[in-house]
Length: 125
Image (tube, rainbow, N blue to C red; front, top):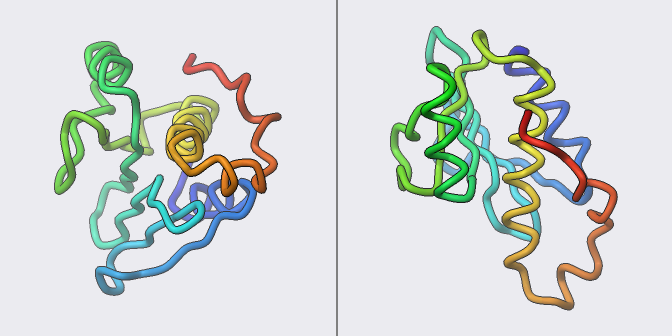
């Protein structure tokens, strides 16, 4: 999976917006103004950072060399996915899990306006 495919997939999720608040080297994806995905553009190896449950993130890092603590983010909650070394299905699943983790912490009124229910049955593997 390459950077453009990650971008297309993230934008396919309900009500996602993207912007570049840190400059032209980073794409940030948000749901209801909250970040769920960082996509770094200025490095030779394509990488994105996703927000995961701390225990699940730690477990995934133990099983996959290409999933590591996020470079410039809270390493407990954010993990870098090295795109060249992971299967597309796993990457899409982890992006979706990151999206859902953020959606579930939104205020009920905001959350209820987002059609995310069909995404809730995504598995990690």
